[in-house]
Length: 119
Image (cartoon, rainbow, N blue to C red):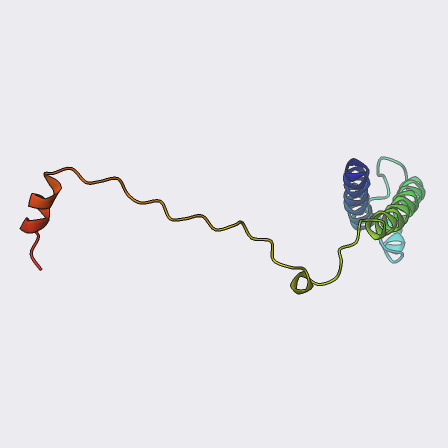
């Protein structure tokens, strides 16, 4: 189930980036007047009105995909297994304590070095 969530999330992010890019590529309604006088991009790849129709339809399709993936992500997130409330309500599970391990006996020469250290 986790891979479905990841797949839908990836499609959702790509659709969001696509909508952002397509909205930024479109020109506003006031740009048609400037294009009539030759200052706009009326000779674009799709023609004067062809680009508006293509970009509008593609934006509408990506917006629909974004909406559907949003609902899908909400549904998938709501079906996640629920915890039993707060973290503070659950008992603390600790490991049983073990007796401390004693250090092995020091070699005989270690005492002489300890006497050389000033106090």
